[in-house]
Image 1 (cartoon, rainbow, N blue to C red):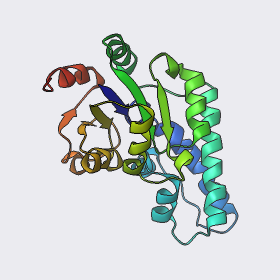
Image 2: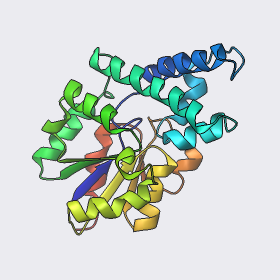
Image 3: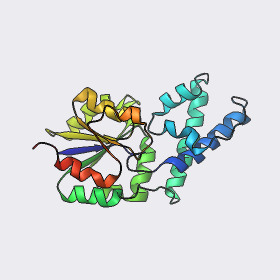
Image 4: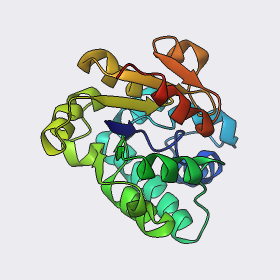
Length: 218
């Protein structure tokens, strides 16, 4: 069985790292006259965690030109990578032990994320993700198409008869809905209860995942 994990909000506790990066990008926009000054809190922008950059800017400031939002997005990306490489990336409590247990039991682990390639590479380096994961699928490498459209590439690269999608946002759960996969929603992440209504199962902590997998029919 192959387990597909979302990254931010499922494995990585991204809130503070993203909030700091977002505020720096917004300050740039305000200084250039594209937005009024405003001090966003981490919780104010957490709804954008797990959302691709084009979707995020289309929702947040749809009036910006592509050139402007891409510059702002680059600031967020650069700041977050700096934070990761400076030791500020944090996996959720229980994630390391859970991933090790699943790997030892013979599950194949992959990451399917809406992130940029350089961002994932920084995390691989800083957190030693390669000890657990056999493959990484970043939305940037596929032109930021939706995750459910990236899944066929996953299946081609890592053929298996059974896949489980584990995530915290509706973009993760659509992978399961469109492709017929069992989905596990992570209530400790950044998604809402409404988003998780479509999940097959919901977990409140990473340590609950092995029992969910054990409950699946053979």
